[in-house]
Amino acid sequence: MSEHDDTMPVSADESCIACGSNSIDSVPYIAITYKSSSIFDNLKIRYCLHCGFGWSWPECDPVILDNFYADHYRIPKKSVIDFQRLARPVVSSRRAIAQLLLARQFADVRSGEMMLEFGPGGGAGLDAACRVLDDPTLVAVELNTGAADGYHQLYGAQTYGDLEALTKSGARPKITLASHSVEHIRLGDLSEFLDRVFALMAPGGVFVAEVPHVDMRIHRETRTHDDPHLLFFSQESLKRVFLNSGFEVPFVDSCAALYETWWTSIQGEQDQSNLSILRRLFFRLPLSTQTWILRKYHAIRRDEFNFDSDEFSYGGNRTCLRVVAVKPN
Image (cartoon, rainbow, N blue to C red; front, top):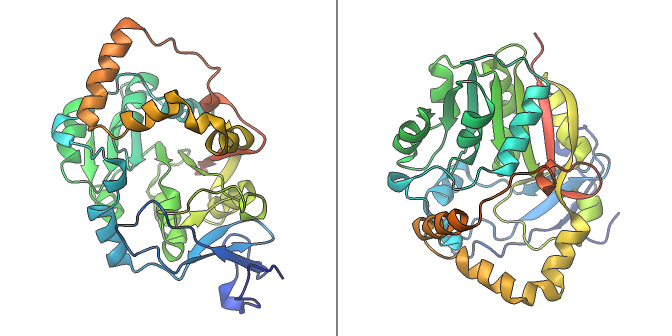
């Protein structure tokens, strides 16, 4: 038993939903980013010693959680998205392009077929779909007010407020994208969410999800904060939760920056450099101002797209995980 744990032994109904093991440990939940809300106070993270799956406990009240995302979620970023002034990204997102190129390796995606994205935010995934896919039909699930008009104007996308409304629409996506969304789902809602998406998708369709790589068995001491995440994945547990909902999983691997590089950058001298200070100041500006500056910058210094970016790198102890889950024909 770990010195961090004060909940073991657990009962049978407290077993890991990914692998079924009841070998569970826990660590305190680090809540730093969202001090404006008390929703993450007094939480712990339970995690499976067998497969590495982790979850916050006790469960957040769903109504309070919805209110948090409506009222507090973007406050620390100082860059609330103004969907009335939404514009296409100045530079296409390498992350979104990498995700969609991966999807195309495992599905026969034809012209006009549907792509669904959960939580598009500023629209990087929708923009990438217009560049990577052939005349896609785009749909989105996004809670933020005003998103529907912005997505429709820029990408011709149809937006729904929740999964239930999307299901009633009769949508049958061939590609489903969830980039850093699944980790925000409550433990008690995860299986139902994946089951419903599985039923919704077209046969042969692919679900590409990306989440932070946080395996408490190895990353317990390399964390800066946990909020607002509710679920924490190892490579094995991410695969298992999709298999449990009927998907085939032909690909799952780590991606993005190496943990060692990332951890050094936030702990060492790099964090005190003038460049780091300028970056932090830049991301505190209103999103419209950030966009204006980026357009001016890239008009002078053209961005050269290449595949050397960390977003196209896989394997090893990296900061994120990507999974491709396929609905069998």
